[in-house]
Length: 316
Image (tube, rainbow, N blue to C red):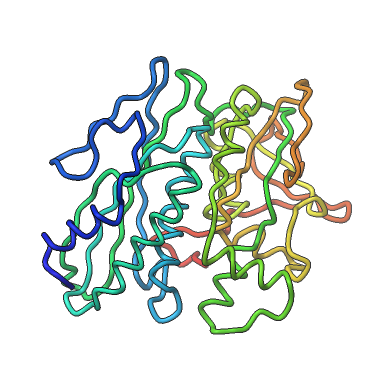
């Protein structure tokens, strides 16, 4: 690694002249200055990417890690219906890490920000004494005051929807971390999703005033639906046959508990006339009875929250 000062200068040059009117002051001072539009609120989120927990350096390129780091933050903002504005990235590296790795990381970060028209507004760098790479991101977005999507708004009778194909994240991670070659088009989609995921911020923005509750699917459908229901004080029944899963995911393990799909799970009141856009699937309904259930071939069973959970043996 090069010196801290030289590294921060490189990051500032790499970020270039990308600007947003809401970011009054970005890289270069002790803190960034932001001013949201009049009548809007700021939405903030933070997330981590830790070597040997979230990525494997021997299989995941630095650019892949950059894309995934940004997607984790933008996906949280999407679930709130927030428009992405900026990110702050802090990183800690082993001292013997080649300088090319963090440079490729930041190229991946900047490439992932570009479609969202969000900017890199600052961050920090440090040495990692444990010899492992640690990456932290703070995402900043904005949403009209009082119109942010929440996990707590679902009510009995609401319909449940998900975007995309679930299980892509799990299958892509499996392929990448075992060195397998894609065997079919679904495998190629999954590997691309793992390496270059993309958050659903456009859908999140479109759901303002339509969805009653929303959450992003980062820990798996079963776990994230359980989170939404707990915050709303309701239950849910989903139809196994309606879940948009990969054809190879016959037992739906990846779709239900794989995680890292970065799709949106949301509810819409049944009385609301709303036509789902392409790529969005109705999978069930909210109930007054607590608990999450899955209906499969005429039978209903309790669905455990079997996705990712830190500090637990119940991990993928």
